[in-house]
Image (cartoon, rainbow over all chains, first blue to last red):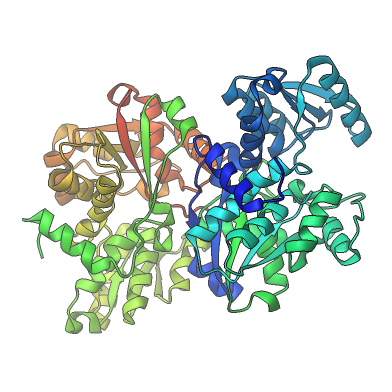
Length: 315
Length: 315
């Protein structure tokens, strides 16, 4: 599968994953609208299977495999929501899932991956060690590697969130999504172009992990070194592929400082009575900081996930 | 208005409050179902205006007043969700709202009432002082007293939550609602009898504030003295009126210990990614304690509110 025809690939992804993922609801809030000075429609991927939009890409990848490919299982080296989502999708297809995680992974994240029956492989906390151990696991097991974002099938799955949002709120001026490695923003921009009636796509990033903002301006990948942000889902670097999609379909990248991310997270919790993780708060935080492009507009905001450690809240 | 014809009164309430309150969504959770051993449908009144089902009764009361009655405003002595809801309804009708609160009311609750523009009157923290000050305010202003639950118009408003739930999930075996003063359980039982196709209604109460369970068995009001529960919305006593409705339409009252309330609250937060206040967790907590009547059944659960102090969580 390729994304040379995104509309077809995204429509196929929707059909493929429909039995396994939720068509998540959209919510609105008068109080948040009043504070933002815009009319916001929140796409609640925090209600998605596994608590994050990642289930969309993971199920699309796992359910796209032929029986031969699937026989050896799947493998990834994400310790976050993608690892848990891939484990869930593999469990659903009854194939093995290998997840390589660094030794310093938080207990709650490890438990989520473990809870979906994945085989966990622990490595040193460096990218080189992760990749080496994943390569070894694949060589030994024949597992198919499913990258968290540098993968067109995963991107087509992620794109289904915005495709649904556009149906649920057909009159949006803008869709804002957070940027980590760039899979969601890539998929969002593809859905916007394919189905969006001219809706603009804006990416949002923590100021403390702003490789996408810098790469977007420089038009080349500037890797993220030493990210400093509470938004643990957004610390990865863009790939050549995701930067290419962004340059084609994203209007702008806005950033938010850490205090604004925490404030926005708390505002959503208290005004909307929903749990979102810090990464999900970055678009609203950036909107409250960079009001100009959003003022008075009708804005779709993708709330990417709700997996938080209730014993360690950031306030 | 009276509740001699509940179906008509509840239908009228729905029409009267429709422009002002949300038809709240229902949510389900595989994880919670697996733990409960039942199929649960959660009616999300935590997403209601003001963050609680109380908006239904308050709007029904305020919008039922003639212009003459409304001119002097409304008055109540609830420091919790009813006080805030009445303030919101009065603000919407642009009439004064007087709320008598005890001096020890938590700052967040006072702020919610204040935020909707109510006039706050502070008294000593005794029921006698509350009633005396409310009587004085009414004598001076001509405000109409709106009791939080011992009031048929408020009960008809509360009943609209179950009426909607029955439409959203027509195949329920049981509806469970928490019991404080008994307004919600009264309204729920009236809607179940009027619209419920034989659905049974079960009340749930904290073991540390179990006056309704005891009154229900004794068939007479046994007032709550010294309630000991985190579920601050459920500390009030039944009235003769609400006990009468319960005896007519409630099958059973189940109770939950404090640890189970906290566990159920945390389970809903982490599995469903929604904020509920402790009172809302009591039905699920009681179900997990008293499994028998619920096992394998399809159960509607009214989540009454989501107003929590994010700086003081019970875990």
